[in-house]
Image 1: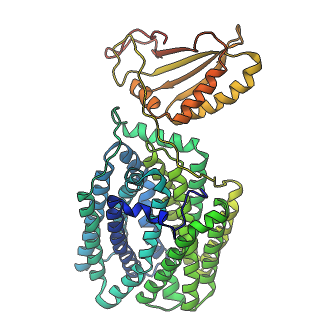
Image 2: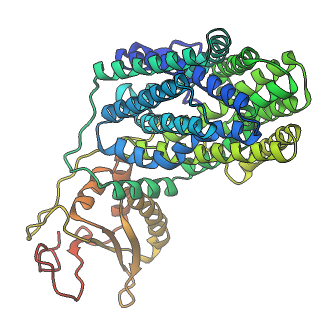
Image 3: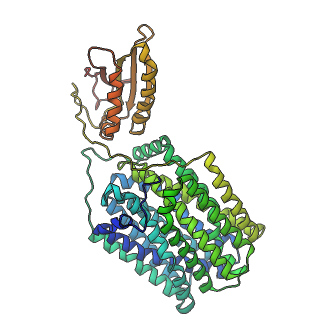
Length: 548
């Protein structure tokens, strides 16, 4: 990752803002984020005033993050198969509608704690639908070289708004009341709706039909499972979210019980957290030039641990503000680095799903963490919960031994999307299958080890783009003959697999061919599997295709 992110003080960092579409949606998102932060302050403070349960207060954070665990995976599959612009619009509509319903319930005097959590959950459902589509659209809207800067701008933009949003929310709640805060939030959610409606951008279309949601989810899960970079970033993000969320989830209790402050004090401290986050975003590029991704993640964990421990021990608003500024810097540095890692490791055809899987697990970690630290605060003490969070964050830093973050300097190459389907003798339907692919090689004994090394790479390449049940067999009668076999569920899946291959994947094929000792090219066979039961009428009856 080092080197992929530009210095925030250089023009390259702000290059994505020269793109009018990105700039318009980015600015509209900041307006919406400002409203969301005001709403978060209002909901958290409302819950702290109407409920005596520490757990219910902490569950406000859980309700706003749980939808990411439940819905993001489906949202990512939808974003990769349908218009991402329309998915974003649908998510924003849900956010605006749920916010309007929350405002109406407060106006009418319905402020039951569980109802508040329910509306918070619905608003977060809209965000869970919007966010993967928006993040995946970044690569469609801006140039590839600007993707790291664009992802960093998303994080820095939100945290810039965080410097004023919570304080503004506290001022509005204290001066004008909860209804005004909720109404202003609802209006802010309408700004991205209008922007997305007006903005359009080009997206590379596929000549193949859409994947089914089930297949799309399976392919996304398989790709993620085969990517060590995405797995490491997701694992560390989940653990970091679980450990660090205590800072935000328990802050209303810190203000109410330890600092004896008001909604304005709570908003001011949240602004301090946001100010630290902006400062961390500004230093982000410099940190990644002088330190590895793993070292930056460790420093982020230590900064958040120091923040949590300080909140556990102090009764001074000034000390708490300084601690939260440090925690905000660690927070944005960790999340921006992890997010860019997932983006750069994901090709365009699957980026919506990998991002959604990352969001789902991170959201789950945050939701679980909110419940855990809220339970500890209620059953033990607030001090124990915050101290426990600090200890957990140090363990997350040490988890780099098990899940080290990888260094990546450029994004995953785009697929060539150039494939001429082989001629077949049967009239295949898009859902005909399963399709079996066999390639027979002649390999001299002296080249066997080199061949096996390349085939390990080929297995990884083929499996991550859709091949299933990949195997390599050696002929017992003629040991120089090797057969590579793989399957796809349908004929369309076979075509889709070959459209996903990149130039680097093709180069690997050429290196394998160089080890083939036959006078003719490796023997290539396409077949369709058949059971011994009665054939289905809609499917071809001949089991094998001519060799190609």
